[in-house]
Length: 234
Ligand code: URA
Image (tube, rainbow, N blue to C red):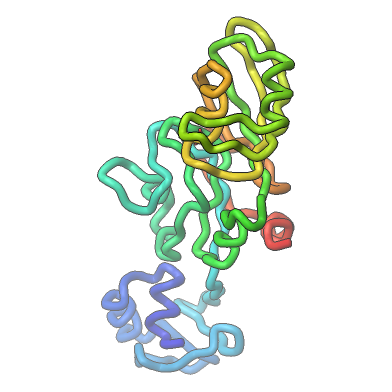
């Protein structure tokens, strides 16, 4: 990989800025000062330093965000996106959200630039389960649990795969957890519409074996641990 690309990827500025930085003689490859942006380096084998600090190269970034309501889970939009919430040092990796949450949905959103992993997690073939907490306008009943277990017919005729509904509070306003194994557009909201109820608050709390970190306030994020990344890749 070219040295300027490596440094730009690691957040040392644009290619142009990196070229200027190189000219100042503060970059060394295996102890030798180098000013050549085109120099080829092996991120694994060569020791690159800037101002005598080692540049730890990595290709991929894996983030867990507690998505707040009111932002779009996309990379670009007229409105604020989840990527806009990342610090510039993380944005240089050009990460993207893994799947989508509605603008008003909160909770667990994975953000990465690892296309292979994102594909694995979102591909209908793999049925990665996703669990949501929701507040529902209406009294959620055991019949709803049975209906979701069988699969409900959405307004467009699609019959959902079985979903596991757990009632936490059953009242005029109910609280539930629902695990689904597919990800149709507005799926949770439409499943409740199919049983004449309305989702008034929706939060994703789990994806595969990864749980939303309760220490993250809405809008905050952190890197996944190595263990979490390995769990997702399984
Ligand atoms: N189901 C929905 O209805 N909305 C989401 O954001 C996620 C699942």
